[in-house]
Image (cartoon, rainbow, N blue to C red; front, side, top):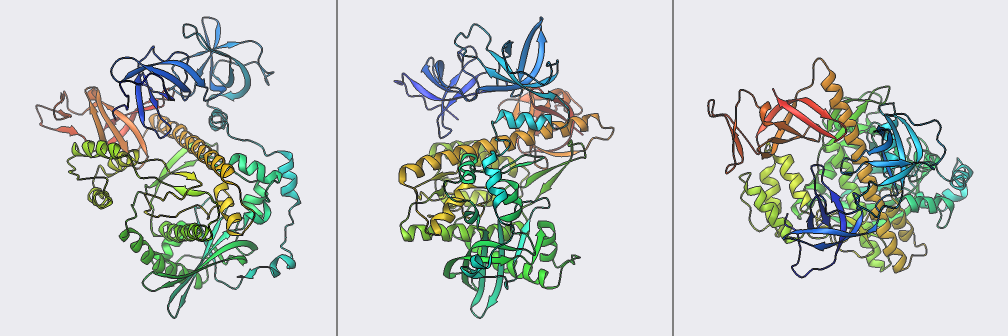
Length: 634
């Protein structure tokens, strides 16, 4: 993408992001590229800092001032260099090493070479000198079980333990629901209610009930009534607001609420009465919603299913351990969900789902295998019903004209869509006006099933704006909905808890507070997503290192996503991993790089490697420090 650098710009402001291979880029709050920053022009800025810059030559600029540091600490590897203690950052995008000064906090033991540590940064004003800091925490030896994830937690400033006041409030919540509370609610314990979640789910936010009626269907979406337990202004509420969401690392969940609430009292567990905030839909056989109502309820989940169990039932397979009513209910639910889903896409919703890669760990917490989790009918069933509930609540808040927090996904920048169109042309994809939704839908249909579908979809997603939270209902581009918010996951998202309170008619928050809260929640969501992504990357590096050490390394399907004179960049769809195939690793070489066609050609065998090609590969090199993986064709 070309920088948006105006000729008369004097002072530029943005976030500085370093590139692993050198240089950096200055980006705006909406991820728009402002300018390129060459090596030696970054001053005393570190990766992620908010900075001020001055244009230099062409599309480049130089950093003149650090406005705000992204982090007060650096997580890295303790080493010695010429007798001087240094810290090498975990994040390879930080191009500096840091000198260790005396005067840090007392540690559990003296640090040793190879330990992971936390370094608190000193002020750094002279780019001619190395940055310095003081040790504040010893995380443990690099490679020791759990140290990698602890490094991720510290690196993203994720919260650890809950304050004592929170734990006291959680402990004081009664185990049982009193008759007085039940009497004030609609009793839905007679409904046939199911939950469908991942195998290892601990917090169950949502449950569904589907019944056939004379005119079609009645769908009830039951959502955990977290608002009953977490009152505004309480210690639980203040901490939930600060965290704003749960964070799901590969080996653990860092919850928004204490486990007593998130995994027990609020969680819609099977066979136990639970409080819910429910949305009731009357839906015709053709999928048209004719009536919606909302109620505080008490429910009792009949059966807890995993996605795999639900999928087997949808396919008509026998699943042991369930009464015959369960597969009947699942199949009826899918019949309704499939009708609703077809209507949604016919109305212009974009299918942007990606298969999730599940990383399984062994008993010692090391990456053992990876599994591609397909967004099959069992996932789609839950997704469609949650989308209906979220939209229904958004419409209701609009109807009442009460302030709330909305989930927004603004229309993409036409320039970025045009950039995608040009890049797609190199893959032989001829596209028209991508600002038109019909053309976007045509593109998504055209790439379905192509070997390079994964790469093209990623490129398209990069051309879109990031979804966020806002007090204004600005619509959701991807879902093609004018009114949309998050309501269905209040155990793990504070925005949903706000929506529950608004729907219940509790005293609202003023506009200024909602604006600040929306920004805070958007920021914490992004931090959590970055931490989750890093935790997966760390474990993928560990997995491929173990593959490298294996006598029989696993073969992976790879798609060529880019070509350069030094080799091929490949995407592994079944591992959600990007890597490099060096030119010298191509089989039966030598190969010549054709710059005009962006492909490698073997003049003798006529074999070529170009963008979009599918290649079978094994891992041949892992650079854990730079978090880079090389592959070789097989």
